[in-house]
Length: 322
Ligand code: AFP
Image (tube, rainbow, N blue to C red; front, side, top):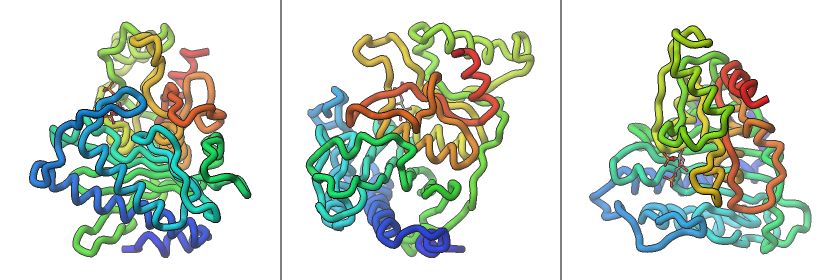
């Protein structure tokens, strides 16, 4: 089986970018080990702190953030980082070419129940001569990403990666500590009978999403004329992985549950990297009104509505929003 660096070299990926991706993955291997140790390493449960977004931090949120932050900043390959668990961006090497935004442990509420979690990352080029301490270097649309991926810590540890030449899966060979190519050019099936949404929020959705989901649930008794199944992992990384593997539609739509927080998922380190992986596998990623990767960000922790997955099903959902 082919290892990650030669695969990326064949794609013509710049050596410095490959080194940066390998640096991210070095941290992910350590995270995979710590997550796998579970209760044995005393890392389950919550801290007493909240992050800037008012969410209680799990011990593993703090630990994985520190791991990624230290290894990236020490590597010299990054000009700056932005993390879900950092209030502000952190400056790195002024001479480095790249900036990295990441969610160190997506779905961390799953840690205590031994369910799926993952690390999501997005890499962009820093503007020439930019000040590493200037957060505006991250205010670039997702279409500027040069690489995006996640590492899913499940029964096996799987990397989904794109550098703009398709989406590939690599599986961590834990004996040798190497990521081996296990699926070249993943393709999201265009049609699906599976949807993923937190249905407990139904009464708070906008009418378009209410109508779309009602029609899915009506199945062969409704206008769709066929039955749909539902899945919800409560970790975007797990839900998106399923969509990449066998198709589906995943959405976290706008809702009115908390007027101060109409959207849940973060643009820079959740929606954008997942959108690039999905588009590179032939799917669609939209907010309901625009392509996610076209959004011009205005804040590091900006949130957006997300509708992504199988092309024909996402288009059907978007028609309800017109
Ligand atoms: P955490 O990382 O705080 O657990 O949040 C995960 C997440 O942002 C995303 O990965 C899930 O799709 C979504 O939240 C789950 O949200 P619900 O709490 O509504 O199930």
